[in-house]
Amino acid sequence: MISSFAVFSFLFFLSFVLLSFFRLSSKKNLPPSPPKFPLIGNFHQLGQQPHRSLQKLTNEYGPMMMLQFGSIPVLIASSAEAATQIMKTQDLGFANKPKSIIPSKLFFGPKDVAFTPYGEYWRNARSVCMLQLLNNKRVQSFSKIREEETSLLLRKINHSIDNSQVVDLTDLFVSMTNDVLCRVALGRKYCDGEEGKKFKSLVIELVELLGVFNIGDYMPWLAWVNHFNGLNAKVDKVAEEFSAFLEGVIEEHKEKIKTDEKEEGSADFVDIMLQVQKENKSGFNVEMDSIKAIIMDMFSAGTDTTSTLLEWTMNELIRNPNTLRKLRDEVRQVTQGKSDVTEDDLEHMPYLNAVMKESLRLHSPVPLLPREAIKDTKVLGYDVAAGTQVFVCPWAISRDPTIWENPEEFQPERFLDSCVDYKGLHFELIPFGAGRRGCPGITFAKVVNELALARMLFHFEFSLPNGAKTEDLDVDEALGITVRRKFPLLVVATPRI
Image (cartoon, rainbow, N blue to C red):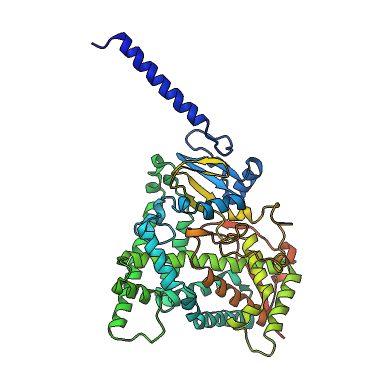
């Protein structure tokens, strides 16, 4: 029988251990945190536009702020210094991506690059993308496709003019970016007939689902809700239909390879992935699901961000007539005596480059970049525990008044004498992220955006319909995987005289 003394000694020892633990815990230097509710944490403070709500909280609690989303601790990093620590100094320690149910289902595991957790598979998949699909030589090889699709964009604008119609730039930008990616990734466009409608609908649904907040990621005990609101069924449907579509595309490519129907130098992403699969030089086992997931990555990351950036850039140019005039004059001066703009001309347009940088600064397509701490660490003196989700906020950083003068104003001139770029080396401007998890498609997106914009300004003048004033142009936002305009951008185009 256990004596009273033994019981007392055990309880005393246990109390000592617990007291020591809580004392050690209390010594942790945690980032400031706003008050939270039981169970839901700080969800009630996000609102309809989380990037703006988080900016307001940052102004009150500082650029390093700890929130609680359900059962998950979440660090909000809204300064260039914090972003540098997370995406450069301690990049490896924050190289993981938070697990999320929807991307896992849509990307077969996931087996893509954007959402896959850090590890050997992710390193191999990203290496294939960087070395085989998105290197500079490969991007340059698609110049003919970009020129043909931007020419088609111009013809569609002309068609609207001929029919005295208002031009829906939002729709035209979405179609152009989708068609460019189709030809680059799949070898041909899928825009006509029932097949085209189905594919376009699938891409739209894919992008929409990736922007959906899933309560089950943060409150597992509420995951059942998605069975009743139809979300799980929709995710499964899109995943199955996209999978079947891409399997058909891949089989078409295999047949063409067998019969030598592919033209020399016309290899698209599917061809390249099949070649990597066949050679298996790196020891990376490229399965069918890997090919499908990586191709889907291109559409989810490439269509919405590119079309959204073009949309916001034209939005700002129309709202700022002097800037529009200055850019138009540069484009036409550089191309004087020519019938159109070529990609080689873009290198001689510094103001165009400044306009694109300023558009990315003011309208970061992806306002919150998710990471996850792999191990316990410190960031700017604060303790961050392993498993903490981290959101770096390029949208807030790009509007930080301690970095940018008049941050809410569209002023491309701020970049004319500045070396700051958006390719992940300057942390005051990181719309595409940085470090290991930075977007690998920056070069590809840059050329598409600049060529489309330059060609439009070379051929047309733009104004608002029905005599609307430029200052009345709405800037309402809609949030999905990107922050896009809430309503279509409708303009009147006039051919250049």
